[in-house]
Amino acid sequence: MKTTTKQALSGLDFAISQCIKQDRMADEFTLAEYIVKTRSKRSTAQQGLDRLIKQGLLTKRLISIDGSLTNLYRKA
Image (cartoon, rainbow, N blue to C red):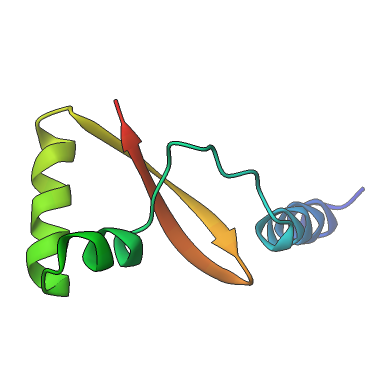
């Protein structure tokens, strides 16, 4: 198989994997959910979550939800 064909297939596999709905764990939440729960501004909420990630208290992972990439956060 040619290198360009391999690259195209690996790109296709990646695109398909991003479209498939990935499982969300029960203890995970999105930025939007955090904003609603804390009633804070988006920028304030994002800074707070980023700070907790830097401190090692939260982890995040990127998944596709309805075709949009979204970060899911959970306790580390």
